Length: 626
Image 1 (cartoon, rainbow, N blue to C red):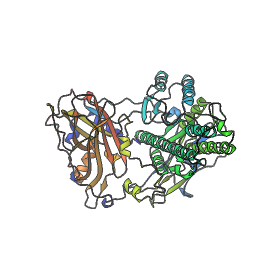
Image 2: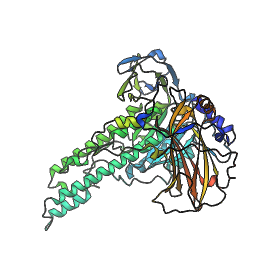
Image 3: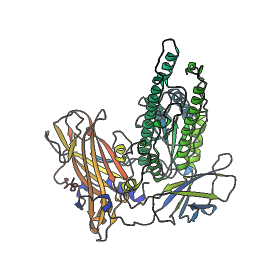
Image 4: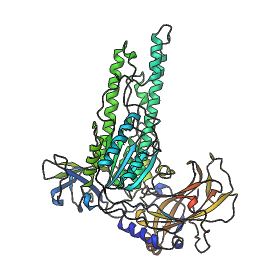
């Protein structure tokens, strides 16, 4: 959440001179120790935020409740409500304007409505069959034409990556243009609904085997079926990874915006786990799980106050096995195959619906399943998420052991329904996140999907700028003549065939210290464990060059007091090829909390600016020793 101090910090940065970040004092630097050696200190009481949506039997919001009407429990034990606030659609304020920065200054601050809930629409073509996408587009146009004006909404698309289609706006024409965006391509990993006898190759082989002079080896067809099932399992794992990556990006982007965010997710399915396939000889060869990545994603959603409202765009589902588009010839002499395919359809469809329902409940949203009226589903999701109550409490249990803690909210009034997140994982906020991951035993590691690297996702070209850490970056040319050598600490991508000459650019960063874990040590100094990164991409999204430095920053008390106003400074230089169009992705990673900030800068916006002057230059922080 973008705190008041963060806003003041940003406004301060908007009015100061471009070189001010360079003038900030520099802390002493030492190589970062191993994670186990990092000193962790308690830094105050943890606050848990719970948004509660209360509706009556007709799904209308219940208004004017008071804190005394609620009872809040964690693990079955009563908790004291520290703060209480009612939010309505009418309490939302207009979108504030983006601060105007001097040339060469960029920030990841993203204006959004404040005072009420923020609505984000995710059009998921990765997990939606093509025919259902046509119906989705039709229903969305109907929603735009009938929705009430004045409710800002942002729209994202999901293919194999997340795409920003439209930033927050209430202009219906812009929303229509976003949904018609040609960048939303059909999914290369799904072309049908769940279930069905889609194993086309094995079906063709079966028909051929039953014909005169067919296949004599009885092991051939089962082997082909096994191969196809494993291919399908791999595709499901890819879809799960791409989907969780995208939701991670959205959560980190929305984290810097105040209040509740409603993620209305149009999708055909979400394959979190790949179940055993009873139609093949080795059913468990296809099993895979993304449970660990799901846990990390729900933690991010919780931290960013994002409630997920999945809408199954397939509507009411029926088995496709007897559809005219499916081959039914294989069932003539194999009744058991039909029963197996029917069971497979119901298991897959049930698993997909269960995953969407689970994510909704875990985040405090609601899943719309078997509903053919998508317009009504969106209206209900927006209405439900626009009127809510925010309760906060400090847990009485201070044993941060990483276990899941169940949250219960009770209301004295009867005949109402409450929607809120059902719990959280009690990770120690002062312990580096990498320690949590290292200490966690991963079950079924042979079939588990690879863990998502948060910086890999955050540093993707064109991804939403994560706002967990608010930062400002000044980018100016540092050289007047072409150079054949890379700047210090730059690493050229060995897979790239782009060569010099290069032009060197100076990057000065000022990061909001209130978003960063800065710990006071027994000697009175303050420490932070950070990673600064800059990636150079070409116009096709190929990675060209990297500058990356982990830094263990040490601040004296006087320097610490100063950076609270000026921001945490960092200076680096990056080499960009002279020929071609390029962009810079500038990122900061708090290694202690896994918080991330990043901003993308087109090189064309800075290449003609005057080079950085000696008075504005700053000594870079000493990089960590490798």
